[in-house]
Length: 276
Ligand SMILES: NC(=O)c1ccc[n+]([C@@H]2O[C@H](COP(=O)([O-])OP(=O)(O)OC[C@H]3O[C@@H](n4cnc5c(N)ncnc54)[C@H](OP(=O)(O)O)[C@@H]3O)[C@@H](O)[C@H]2O)c1
Image (cartoon, rainbow, N blue to C red; front, side):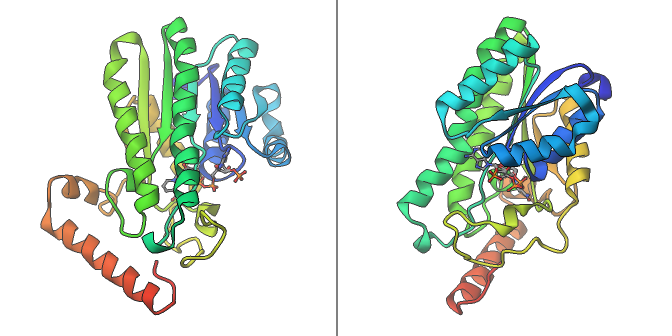
């Protein structure tokens, strides 16, 4: 597995925290040169400092993924400096669990810019480099909400279904050109995403769930499956996350669970309490 990453050049967006940071660290453990990208210069410098044991294989980029020019510059700088770009992890993203009635149009724009345009920019500017090399692997982070629709996550699911669809299409389109595509679909990984909300207001329980999967284990599983050149990669791999297969096939039990989840969330929301 490590051979897949050893000596390769990787760029990870949203690398200052959560899954992005853990994937960056795991890539370093597996011998990759890693460009950690983040929008906040202090946060990304702090993340790089925490990884200083990996020496000159650690690099930083200041990149707000909603800004086309910053994404272009970051990707092109990496390839120019390192001589190539083997892996692009389009990981940066924001959550969006919010009742539809409370979502402003500004919220829809923010989430589309952050979760969809970031991926379009990344793929758009990495592809000419990878096609020129005749190799590369683009790993886009979707969500379990990008293959099954959790109620009260319409904003988020819109963006993540978009990421899944785009990435899967490209996987087939470029298979014979030596460019690989994977879609990461995390579910309940213990990161700060649970402590944040799209508009800064608490719409529910902003705590990391007790049963959330450890982020380091998630990162190791992600890299194992990416090295196998899998398309859709659900993390963690367990019977709960497998429910998406039943949903796609119209399984009535899964449908009933989603209606039940909607009722519980709606009820809690109308009582003014937390709903997830
Ligand atoms: N944790 C889960 O259970 C879960 C489930 C499904 C999908 N995901 C997906 O996994 C990815 C990583 O999330 P996470 O769980 O690791 O949460 P996280 O710790 O909040 O990480 C999100 C990262 O994205 C960055 N980011 C947000 N907007 C950005 C922007 N405009 N430009 C550059 N960076 C930006 C954040 O930077 P700042 O620190 O500057 O905000 C942060 O580093 C996201 O795409 C998320 O949707 C996570």
